[in-house]
Amino acid sequence: SAVISQKPSRDICQRGTSLTIQCQVDSQVTMMFWYRQQPGQSLTLIATANQGSEATYESGFVIDKFPISRPNLTFSTLTVSNMSPEDSSIYLCSVVWGGGDEQYFGPGTRLTVT
Amino acid sequence: QKEVEQNSGPLSVPEGAIASLNCTYSDRVSQSFFWYRQYSGKSPELIMSIYSNGDKEDGRFTAQLNKASQYVSLLIRDSQPSDSATYLCAVRKGGGADGLTFGKGTHLIIQP
Image (cartoon, rainbow over all chains, first blue to last red; front, side, top):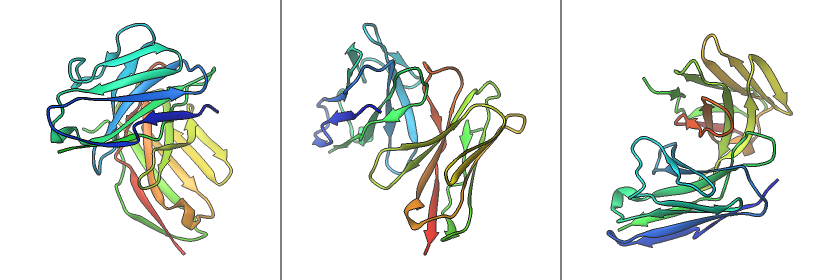
């Protein structure tokens, strides 16, 4: 199975600033996704990170707030822009690789906005 | 109506017994179903996937799917204290290119 890493693992940021979260996989994957898990809640899909093209966002999430890049088959970034305390969450990337369709999650980035 | 519903619990089960976790979903076109385990402070870990009606067994875990009733369950046999976690049911409408819709999870406690 692939090894998925995320950077940073946690951060505390001031409102109004932006944070870029990286997701790195040690082998090529077919699909990459970004999820958010707010405190005490379940996971919500933010977007599908498409390699070489614009991400596909879910209802309620917009590119200006959550710009996503995926320059190749092993790496993606999610930026949380102009942060407010409501953005305090765990942000997780997930991947699908090989011929399967199961999603595997990275360790997550715990973000606190003050 | 929520898309994926689970009883939040906590569900308390004695060690060695069978833990039964249930999930219902609202969208009839859903094709794929997954159970994840999430320990406190950790990311979700895939336990099982199921795609067709019936039972699927993997070790101590059995997933059951009934598309007519829009119902998915997970049975854990010989429950161990290490099984204590939140269990997330996830549903996917289409193929592997689609994201997952998660339930809120059931908090399972295995009592020694």
